[in-house]
Image (cartoon, rainbow, N blue to C red; front, side, top):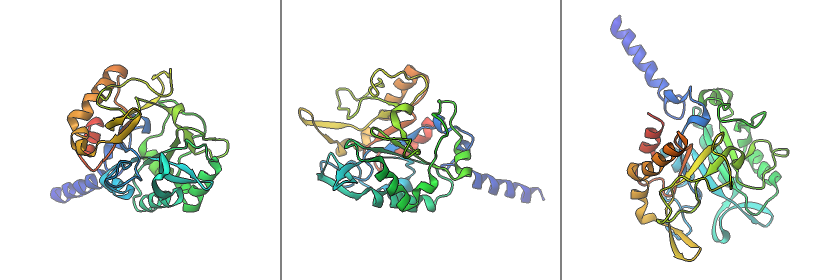
Length: 288
């Protein structure tokens, strides 16, 4: 009888271990107290100078990445997944990108996923909303009823139970009065310096928004190493990705963040997430 009971408990524990982003311990943790490894420029896949990943967004999610950043540009009046310009790198329409995320989310009921979308061309926010609706991804989005402070976010377990488990941020040119679930990144986050090179790589200073207080914000640490070919011309550093994404390299930055702010970053944004120790360091920073 005792062995049957222990077997049942072990089976239950095993099922609980995959409850919330793969770990039972995360179910009771607020979203704002979780550290996510993020895929920088997640749709730009390949080995060219404008590519930041070796694997597709679906493969990134399969790996355990739960924070996907992506850039858009205006192409014929619609948001297109383009890096700097659609001539340089065009990974297809926003709708196709979101459809791949929706398909993955459909098949993974116990996962909270975050999207950070850039909108440097100030494309009409309703066109982003249209793409979410067309794919059905809007059925999963998290929409707060007010701006949330650091201690006011729901737990991952609550988000999963409610079904509102896709969190969407945009860097600029959003309008929550029109699309309420595309949240203002810089109301909720600060970032360390963007596109760091070896000269300013290991630091944890507030860069954007300028003059922001770290107190009640989540924060994103940019840990994607770049090579400066010419003044203001940067390319990713794929040959260094295994070292850049190692536990030693990432924690050399996150330890500075802990010293500065008393907490680890909410996001560590990486190029080439398939290389190095990405998931191991995510687990380590979450105390798992």
